[in-house]
Length: 187
Image 1 (tube, helix red, strand yellow):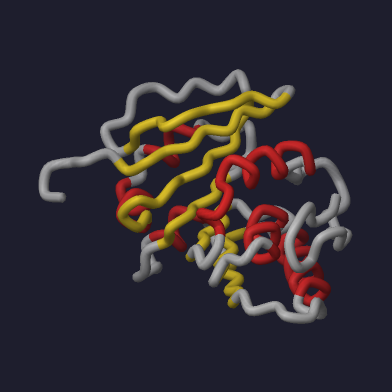
Image 2: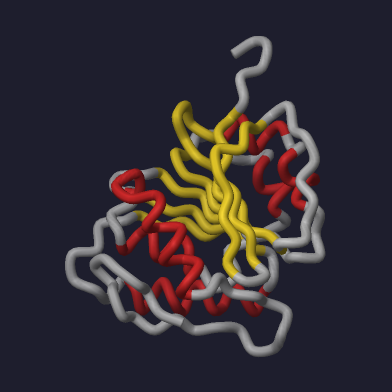
């Protein structure tokens, strides 16, 4: 695995040992970031279920203002710290990074700021509808922002009153969905 573009282009990313982590492939990351284009520049990014930190680091390499990683698995946290240390050795790095340890749902309750891009790559065994039904997640998305959710191609989304599906694409066994916050009463 490597950073595909930007200031850290070509940087190799460490990956946790074992099969518990399923890092976003280079091909899928390239497709995601190609579709996002300049929206990444100066973005405030939240990377949920960070794993290796690949999505957040790719955003940082492409000009994001800040990236907050959220991960609970100790082996993944160690790898993210290692990848961050390597990333920050690149000249001209201006992105601010914050690494939060804990369960995604618990950490979401503690965040008091909004993000223009939220990446979520939960384990394929998790039901993506559980994340999409979490009202706090919607409140963390800045107006005009996007939630980019990676999941198994076989996962069922169901209807959501909190999100509007903007588009989706499949890459092998992976489906990537782009959501905007739905307008709800009180907005």
